[in-house]
Length: 223
Ligand SMILES: [Zn+2]
Image (cartoon, rainbow, N blue to C red; front, side):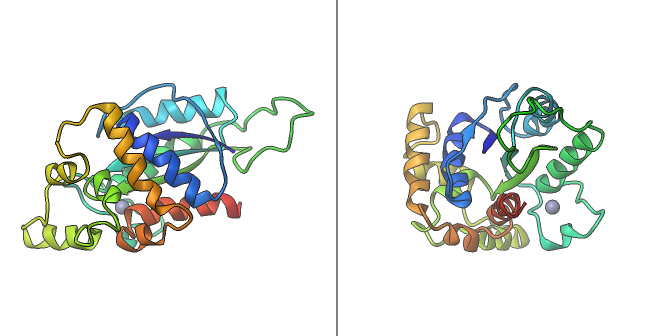
């Protein structure tokens, strides 16, 4: 399988390579991105040209996209209604942007008649979209700090008293809120590697944001 991973920083993308492999249960090749994004809304803005590049210029099977929710609306099952998308939910917005982009793309050319059997994305690039609530450091702390869950964050949004801030999450992961990139990558990969072979804890504690990503990836395998 050939995948591209688009997130908010190279450290996030390093951690996601590990997590995506755990969910898929198989190794894959990572394709370089044609454009970089730094945070929201830049990810949403670069998504259409990245999808077109992957479709026309590569043999990518799929694109994985993960963004932080920050203070935005968290995706819920109610958003899954056919034809609906929540205007402020980042999962809904990214899915909508992806759908709009692929809708009018022509089928891919067969690169070579003798090419090896193509992957699941032969005709089109598949998508897997996740949302880290409120930031990807929450995923890094999953299983180590049981107070950090989507449910805790949603309770905080409802009551107006957030259980933790994004800055606090960074302190808990890196010991600073301004880590160097190499240290950020090292800590991110260290923490997500605790979920080797079993991502159920992440799916349980982050059912909307991580759960959506995992379900999309498993749909690829189901073909
Ligand atoms: Zn949504």
